[in-house]
Amino acid sequence: MVVGIIIIILIIVIIGISFFLAHQSMGIKRQTLEEARKWQEEHYDLSWYDPLEKTDYTVSSFDGYVLHVQMLQNPGDTNRYIIISHGYTDNRFGALKYAYMYLEQGFNVIIYDLRGHGVNESTFCTYSARERKDLLALIRDTRERYPNAVILGLHGESLGAATSIAVLGEKPPVDFVVADCGFSEIESVLETAVRGMHLPGFLVKIASICAKIRFGYSYSDMRPIECLKDNHIPILFIHGAADDFILPEHSEKMHKVTAGYSELHLIPGAAHAMSILTDPVGYRKLVRDFLGHIERSSL
Image 1 (cartoon, rainbow, N blue to C red):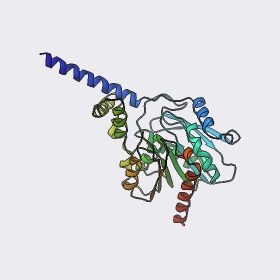
Image 2: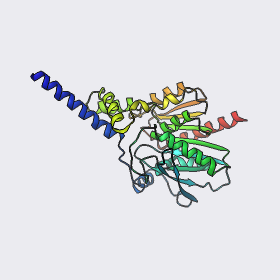
Image 3: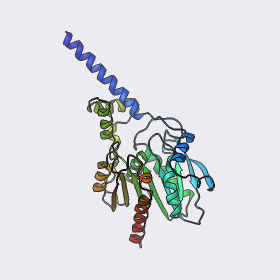
Image 4: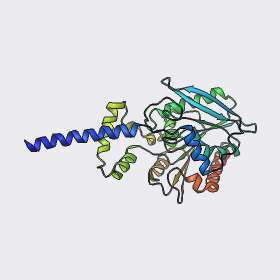
């Protein structure tokens, strides 16, 4: 009798913890625009941003969800565009550390708040499952809004990188992707985090079921790597070699799986989402050389 009660209590506790994990993992503790901008200004020169000509607008996604977008007009006349997707809890200002690099290379830069982030309506995160459809809507809008776009690329960091990879499963009209420290699937990332809390990793499996019940999505729906098996859009994978949050092996696996041309570069000493700040000169060269290879290949 006592053993049975203990087992029932243990099951209840496990389920309770799993629902808590599902809630925590799918929730978004988002930064305000002011907080994000302050962080950027403390880590690199942002003086170029304010003088730029900018256009703010919104884009409606597949389910009517409204995304807030900003286009940074290149001072020069150009028909090259890049859409930059930021990381989890960040917002459009988190994309600015990559924006200047593209402005220098003759791109108009489009930044936006991912679903549930920035000034968008509050909602839960699905780690690329819904976000990739949002990005697809933004890609299609960009093609319609800027019909002069001869080249349209994607650049993403962390969640933004996973989203930029996952959208390739939708066969979008883009010319290249730069994916910085993206995850190939979210489940192992959460397992690492749970073990860091001194909890057993199997709880993530149960939390996935709880997430499906609570939010309509399980962690198995969040696997960007599955979108690469027949992908032929060129991809540049960049990952911090010292990233202990999303391990470099995520980019290594995606690099091996994609059917098209891809490059993989690990940045020595770089922690999560810090590659461009750890080695800004080397980072810019990697992107510049990658774009040069694509342009030469298309001739």
